[in-house]
Length: 261
Image (cartoon, rainbow, N blue to C red; front, side, top):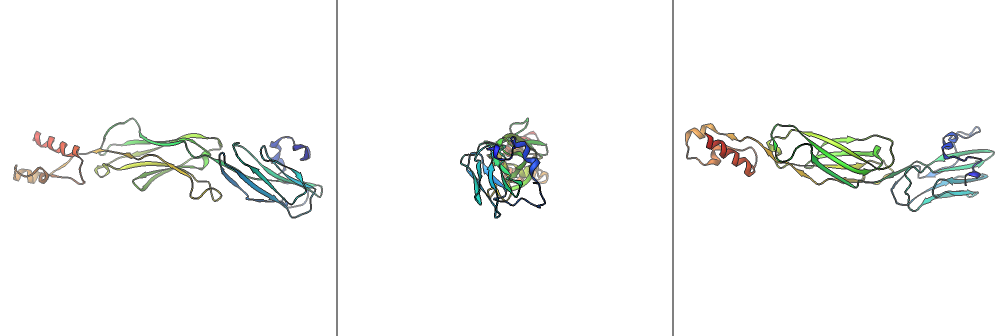
């Protein structure tokens, strides 16, 4: 196929021919769409058309190439796209000139899994201490469009945007530092991997979320010393004031403190 392209043998030479010879300001072909975003393994197609007389034009690609012909519209088509670095281009020969128009192709893959965990810690957390949460995103592509969002309940609390030029799937990690207080007892954290692929990509953007991570926070109860001095017969619930709906472990902690007194 490449022998028709005036002796171009290697695809790497494409970059040398973006601007063709002659006095023309632009290549007289139109691509539709002008950029393709496709899920790995899905089908893809794009048209190349021209409105001028020509000596032949064609699609060149490692898959789906269209031979040199004299039509006014040709279609590049692949039914199962699995080549991560494919670089299709349409070229045209006319009036002793030749030019090409490259079609940008973004192939994406959603993560195999997204999971959340605590780093170097298990069990309940203590109020006021700092802890680290980790989000692991497994096998996602391309990394330059990956964004990891952290949620506490339904509230977005942090976001990590990744960069890079690797087109094939990679695994990435995002971390979040938290310092819980008593109001966070029972709070649920989760992380979400989202591929922000632009206007040509699927809408809404594809995303995969982790299962929620519920945290338990231990905190000291607030003792009402005045009521404690007034009457030892008061109910324990009158003596102890809790800012939130306490779990059983909070009440047990309060009883333990009172028994010491």
